[in-house]
Length: 183
Image: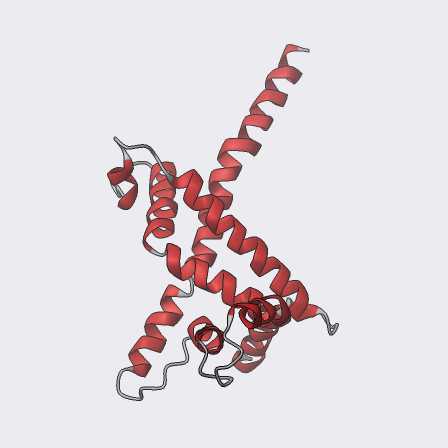
């Protein structure tokens, strides 16, 4: 059972459970959307000059909505580069052509393949995405840390969904209930 669950999870991660050859392409497209959300999240995150330090931590003694907000805000700030890397590397893994073509245009054609900075960056994207570290001494600890930090996109999704629910759906429900009561 454990192996079947793990295989299901891998299929979900790799091709969104689509039984089609374009599953990785759709995954790459959604990774590109995720990358755009990370960028827009960084823009929306900025709380202003006087309150930016408040957005770096979590006030655990506050109510659950504030804790949810703080968790989303702090994780987004502290792990922005990791989230961005996962978005870009997921895009590359699902749709390698755009980034490969970009690196080909930017790279020096006279340098041997594999030694150009763009080639090295593209080689590192899958390693960083999956946490494949080559050093056997500390690689295991990094992989464990990577697995824990890899849960952050899911946490960001859930906390963001809760914030959206409270801001949009709850207000619409309250407004529609107020209208129905007045009728």
